[in-house]
Image (cartoon, rainbow, N blue to C red; front, side, top):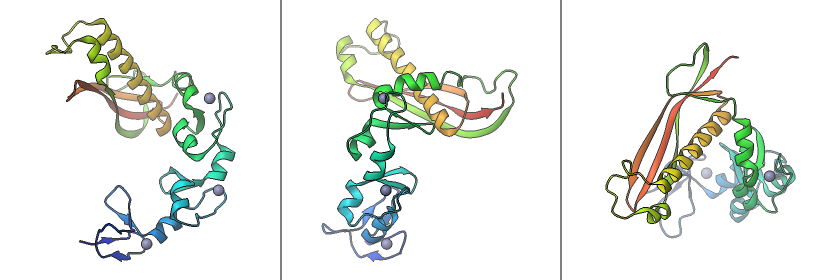
Length: 223
Ligand SMILES: [Zn+2]
Ligand SMILES: [Zn+2]
Ligand SMILES: [Zn+2]
């Protein structure tokens, strides 16, 4: 078995302990040279000097688009509270981009709620008196409710959805609201102003976990 660099087509004969090709998550590989070469900072144009730098000082901001730590720290600040990250991993984990704006995770929820106020979520396949201009695809968000809440409830529940438990219902409705908000975030990032044909599904996982899946078709309508 051998792997091939998707860019320069160089072949690494075997996946061994000393393998140097880097898996890209989609069953493709990059050789270290191409890996480094692909990480060009989209702001200052610099490449990392080595693999270690490529991994620790560069972060992906879009498909095949990267930014170096220096430029990242210069440009990232929360549009709401003005806070700035102190390093790259903080920038990556504590800041997010919502429709082109950068917000910190502390401000994200409130910001998202404000920004998504006009986004329509509808279970039907059209919106009254509105003409759909663009279909932006079908997509879904998923929220998993963990064991913690169920241990509060009961271990003998056989049909959790038939169960009348205020704790559970409260958690479920919080999770539903959260899923709706995430769906709206996706809409903003896709440039959609409505999600139609929205459907809520549940999946049961082992270990008393329940997944909420909210899916729909993202559309853009005029006016
Ligand atoms: Zn290569
Ligand atoms: Zn840079
Ligand atoms: Zn903030």
